[in-house]
Image (cartoon, rainbow, N blue to C red; front, side, top):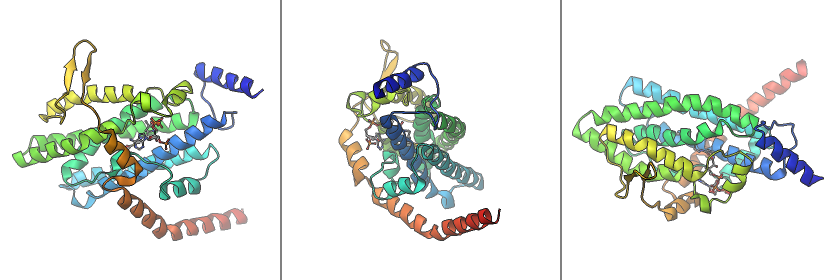
Length: 309
Ligand code: FAQ
């Protein structure tokens, strides 16, 4: 019976039908989605910290207003995604507790520090560029609420990527010192951006099943290659050098070949040993505690008004 149900479920996926919250789904499908969507939400929210670090020090009022809007957008993305995960029968409190205890992951990239204003440009250009590459594919993911959240998120992410490239362009057209800042930011953020796509396909624990369920539409390596192919010409346009001596165009494959990723560094950062892991979680916990009275007041207000209705 359960096998028949699973086959019918797979048939629906194969026929490109969206799965909705009240539909029957295998437990593994539900768990995989809760894991991925909540980790995605945590990434959006923790990702506010490295850029938030520069809001008070943006070089002009315009750059400050743009950065403020971008960081607020990331909070909104987190909210859409927590909402999508909640349709799978988990609660916001459970997800946040898993993040704060270190059980749930968030993207490795946000454990690197933002040392200069150029890092804000590099994050927009590279990190949002990598995020959007992954997220465009997720607009067609098989779970309806996740796919619909991704459509809205992608519209905003493309503005984020554009503003990052624009900030880099301004630096690259500036003084020698500004060009050096841009190059230094690219040097530090290039490899961590490639790590955002996750382990190679052969080492990716979840990819095969997630591709079968059409949760993932493209594999980690496919998306990483697409990102490299798109970004190398952009770096050339900026007059910057990608820090990879093995990077070269391969006319046979029609793609750029690139050097080996440092997977030891990846695993160290994912497992809590990055430069900013502790700081990011401590900051999140402190902000949650400081906002506790606001949540209590909102709950009390809602309760009072629902009783009066
Ligand atoms: N960092 O078997 P796979 C953004 C984990 S949003 C940390 O390949 P999967 C917007 C993975 O979770 C960026 N952990 O796993 C923004 C799994 O661990 P688990 C976030 C990583 O799920 C911009 C294990 O390794 N985007 O940046 C990473 O099939 C600027 C095995 O890996 C998303 O989350 C990593 N880089 O594929 C915000 C997109 N890579 O759970 C602010 C949605 C892998 O077994 C400023 N997520 N791991 O303990 C996905 O597409 C997938 O979850 C992947 C990983 C592709 C990240």
